[in-house]
Amino acid sequence: MRLDPRRITLLSAGLAGAAGALLVLSLPGRDAPASAPAAATTATADSLLQPCGDPGQFLPRRVELHRLVEAAQPVPPVLEVIVRPSFHATRVLQLYPRDGRWHVGVSVVDTPRLHLHHRKAGAPPPAVEDPPTPRVEFHEREVAEDTAARMVLEWRRSVETTHAADAGGLDGVSYGFYFDGRCAQMWSPAPGSRNHRLEAVVDALLDHAPEAEVVRHLQAVGAPRRPGR
Image 1 (cartoon, rainbow, N blue to C red):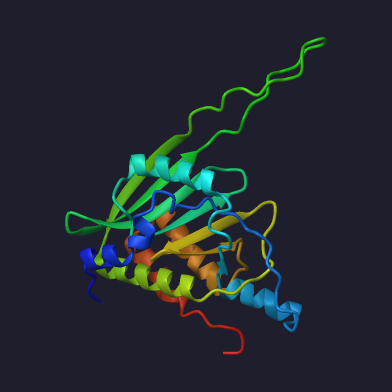
Image 2: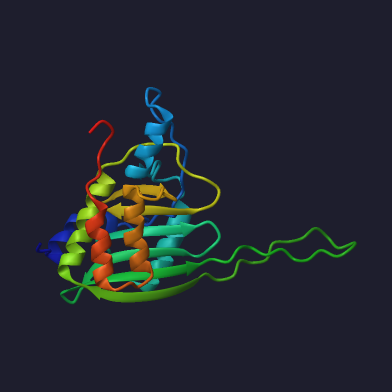
């Protein structure tokens, strides 16, 4: 499979050209169709990504995240995924061409929580300290053109085939997938589901696994299927 970095970059201008295109992932609840049984809805939610919802809902946080990531990795990405564990640093994985080769970059954005001053007896109410400066740790690797092509395939068909479902929670890990100006998301998918296999691809890349392992996970994802098909 042959990828032309220039053509892909142009096709993905909707993603790469906007400074606010990187989303900090949120999982708004979405109601399943009334006619769908609960078990079928749950199965579909783990087989297909969910649409991201209102793209303007979290604009300030998106812009800030994009600014931090762009400082570490300025090349416009062809695709990306934003991974947000509940109690750990956000990680942004991007695929992009540079100097005729394909690269995967991982930016680990650690934004410490606000701290409160300790309050002593008789002291005034606690004041919020200035938030510490976020830290960004960046890692990069080259990947083969065939691997990049397979990533483009999986991201494209994953964000193009989504299903609104009520899946989310207060803890766990959320994933936001972005390609060609589109966004789709998932939250802690069930083991054995297509979303879980897609999660394995992302985790292998985040963990700097050998490329052969990444390819094996990519090959195992499979095409998304809508309900009743």
